[in-house]
Length: 308
Image (cartoon, rainbow, N blue to C red; front, side, top):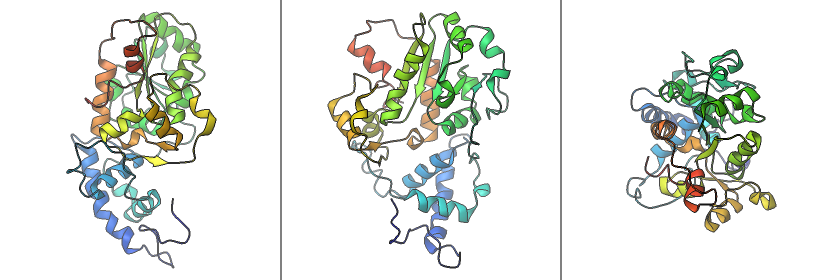
């Protein structure tokens, strides 16, 4: 966190003039935007650009490529935001606007502009037929990013933000049941609230025959395997164990208990798109025992990200 008594590297000088640090971060942001958009001109969120800028500024990251690690971001978020203000968000090609407050809903697979604007309840095709797959994103900005890159079209998979997923629309539940063997994929942060989200969605679904809820991650072991930066907040306390997957390793539980977390936005945009497409378009695995350890690991996302 930025202290009131320490100069932020991206701060402003008295009188409103940008500091040299804010101006020097401009080229790093420009390089990060090019990397975030590759390949093929991907659209990305401001938080994804922040993490891309951190990767540009991380010295020696290539030498440590094979070492599992969860480093802290090398750049304060406040410094990045100030530098982006100085540069001007409109000058960054590929940067998506922020999600307006209250924006959400189900986005149909034929959403042509890929922005997800509007409430999906106006899209009857979402509910009229069987729905074999659905993606629920904890972060509305990530949902918007996937839509902007037409992932919902390529995967034929509607997108629902978590804030709108609970409680589930009965028409949506009926469409999932109608498909027979449908899967609800959940994309969430490696945090107590993120890891508890799949269980909350399972509970909201109730006893719907043939519908499986599968976590796409992130989970703590992904953070080290993918070498993603992690943050630290207040220790979650006793609430930590509520709704967390049984397959979580003790070391991962301790990592979370220390207040550690990592965001889906820290995953490079191209890797995120590839993984979401691979998982949502993949065939459903054979049904196994509900108490199978392998099934539990798969359902909590442990077998997805490192091979992406």
